[in-house]
Length: 303
Image: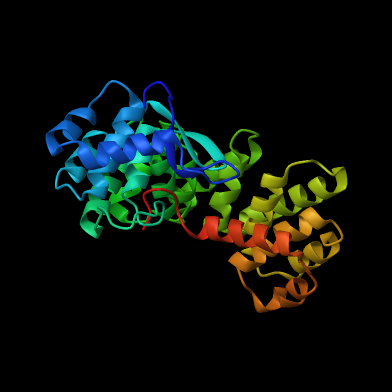
């Protein structure tokens, strides 16, 4: 396991064959005792820790949740391979994904319940400097509860967590408008600023969005992620001018896809004629569906 330096699933590569690393994991899961797995989940090698935790989760060990909480600060990076997709993630994110029903295809195993999700979310929110994908995902879904406002604002102002800006925007407090406006104007934070506008479509942002849309179209700037977020934000404003701008951009296939995503996320009767004009190939329709689903749900810790 250590020599391969990667966590592999049961089927990898173009042929979706079972790798030797997976066979090692199966032997570990089937032959190791509970005490041995509990020791291995503290091993110095991150691959061993991840496989040991997965084995405990598949066995539904009562120790899974306490281990998970203890390892939320495990930010060592682990390489993973599933099918043909290889990526890197922090061990804590892997642990969280392992016990989330959305992200693993176990036949049986430990899955967090609502109370456990709530405890994890509280840790992700209040523990300082916890740079996990899971935290960003949690903030994407965070309800604007009054008791959390100060912490969310602190994440934006002190810890510079971009994902917290949209969470802050959901409170729809006018004193936060300057922060969102500054983010839109910033190259580094523009995507976070546009996502915040989608959550808080105040009229004061509208002229800036319109000008940015026209600039991107006029200069044919290659910024697909920004253009998509810009369309999503603009679609929150039910205005004839937005419908006209969208309609005029449909000759560009990438623009048409971004607009389709925006209109799927924010259906307005006044935009229906624009959406009806968008005809997609099978591959383009899949791209739209994938992006819409990604916007509607969160990441590894989400139910």
